[in-house]
Length: 359
Image 1 (spheres, rainbow, N blue to C red):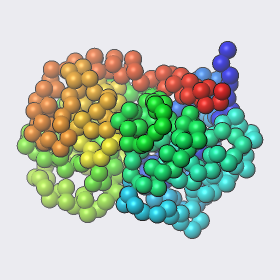
Image 2 (image 1 turned 180 degrees about the vertical axis):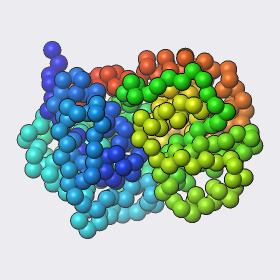
Image 3 (image 1 turned 90 degrees about the vertical axis):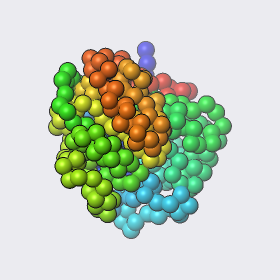
């Protein structure tokens, strides 16, 4: 019989759970919490004030701290130094975690930041780190390498492409991701529109999706927080105003209802994404994805089964792939997602990781 663990999950310091500021980490957190609860584990989530957990995480206890949000490392230059704002939420979260550590069998860290990595060898309760990004900072690269050299069993990654960004002494532990697929309604039919989901920021490459949609004469619906106003203005000046339809940030339940009506999802990242949650969210609705073969998203598409892969930055390739979406069976796309990305499968992979690191 597998052990039942008392787990403290420390959330991202980028923003409150449910705000959208934490990007894909928020969805990963709720998926892993829901999956581990179903497996019988006892979960406590420590997060910034204002956080909320969805209904499927109701078995978890939520604790919060007040403090100033941490800037994301991906918005800094690779050689920038470590900065923590006055009254920052990051040290407050970890001060609370260390004060309460004896209540738990392990701590699971979801913050992509230097502090929790650095303290890991110096605390009593084992800390595990699910790394949420690829290489964006030399300081973080060194912190990950240092911890891996001490005990690489404490580190896990979402995809092989993400893990390949780092110099690791051993073969990386890959746990992928998982989704509560009951939240995603299958849509057998679609409208003549394309979808794009993500933070509206330069590294996400929205301009390529916009240009491809304009040349195809198709409306592009865009869901996500507008993080960079100057970038938004640049996008709007690229194409006819009728091409892009800003939809804003929506919670999962509302997003999937609208996303499911799209003919296809475009994913056009300009950097090495660790995973690509929105790709699986679209597929869960039956929507095929057209994806740049770069980073984690490139590992999520089986060409002709659930979408098409396109060489990075190839807008002509995007246009050609969209024309071939009609060849993909939407039922098959949904079925593939169910077989590979349920929260139950995700929880099992996490359990294997914890058991390895604790024994």
